[in-house]
Length: 377
Ligand code: GDP
Ligand code: MN
Image 1 (tube, rainbow, N blue to C red):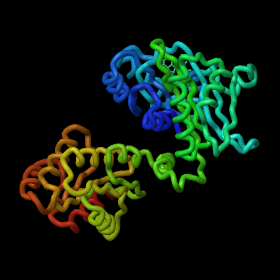
Image 2: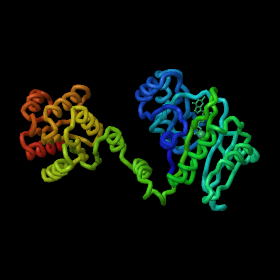
Image 3: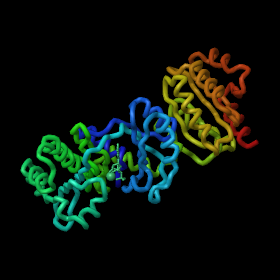
Image 4: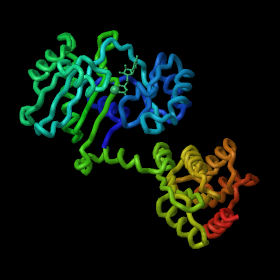
């Protein structure tokens, strides 16, 4: 599997390789907020699993938060070499003095890992290697010996990297090698590894390929792979920290506790309907969680009615009711929302909902029947 830039950089940062400050955004508004946090000039970068994004227009600089908003608006949804852009990385812009290439990959012919270093970074390494092979230094490693300091000095000298950069380059190279081994990667690449105006070496781009046969022992990475095949609503729900599964019916379901939610799915089925999703807001859910849950469920175009089934234990019914009302006030809700609240503070919860457009239900059975009917009509 391939890791995109933001994922590779997260691994770099964790290992102590310098990367620019930044975060991923899925909307122009988010991009603006991140740019605001960072302050100053930022670069907005399309997150797709392919190189050459710069040339394709997927990397743009912005002077201020509004500029970041505009660039993100342009790049999101853009097609970069066959990939639709759904995320952008917004980072502190770098003032680049020089660009290096650094990569370690598996050379299957030689049955060894090969370290590649070049002072002609920035572009495709294949292109540099073809046109100017003398500018690309390569060194094949013995697995038992690993990457030693004399290897690093040899590579740097061969690639023409200035000696004063060795102090920064050596630990970065060692970390890249450690990452390759610890992540079962077949490629770890930094291109460009940039020397900034102030002399610092920073990884401005990152690329990793993981051996799929090793994913069973790389569970964090395997989870990233699962993301790829997931429904966009499931990804959105996960981003909001919700336990959500998309189903193929038309009654949206929100409940607290996995058991209660599953029983609710059964009850909908028994009443002749079909659930559009599973969503467990968990115990002790606050208004904010309820709000997130309802927003996700309502953004599903399949949903024709919503059934909210809450048994108040640690969860307080009035908290839930408040969350519901907040959402109802802040967005246009076009489908009927049936609510059954019992348990802790149910009286207070019900009172809050009186006279609103929410449909109350006294029992579980009544709630399921009303929600199914509403979805059918
Ligand atoms: P790729 O084209 O997909 O490999 O994407 P990169 O992340 O390598 O970016 C391509 C080029 O954009 C780099 O080689 C840089 O020249 C330029 N670039 C990327 N980030 C910055 C930045 O923060 N500031 C400046 N000035 N240029 C950048
Ligand atoms: Mn690059």
